[in-house]
Length: 108
Length: 114
Image (cartoon, rainbow over all chains, first blue to last red):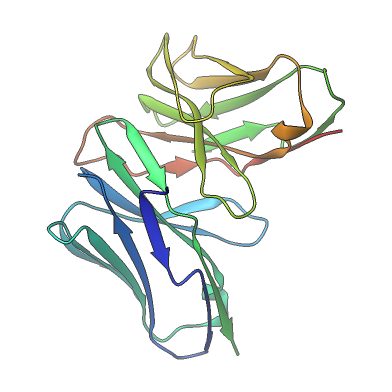
């Protein structure tokens, strides 16, 4: 059983739409990471957060520690946002568990 | 800064052959990780290291060995490759500390075992 669950698994939207990707986890964590992976490409860290909310450009990440839930939002989505978005949680100091990812496709 | 560099980026092996993947980071990070990524699955931890000279097993360590003789390098070895080890391998590193520690990934190494 994967202890990090992402939803949806796949998402197709029109350019300009507001996108939300959710991440739920079952362990007590010290930090949560949102990562981006383009097709055939490497993995890039978007956010690391342990409370509250962070914003970078059109991307916003929030976390609710009590509810063990995080969301990644993309405002004014663009085809270049098409990628796999991965949630990962850090627990017991060194350990990190990854979700299976959400495949996002933004249509022009 | 180069960040995290993995070599080689592509390799084809025959069953039973051995090889070593090299991960090098120039950010003076304490923690380094080796993951494998397979279709339909999240990244799975093979081995990790919290400092020079230390290594620990992750979720799927069987068939792999690692060494961290220098802080900047983390080597992943396959002593006798099997088709089940066909995968994309990612190395990652971060600074120590619960509050800090953004993950930095290499570009991946695609390994095919025939």
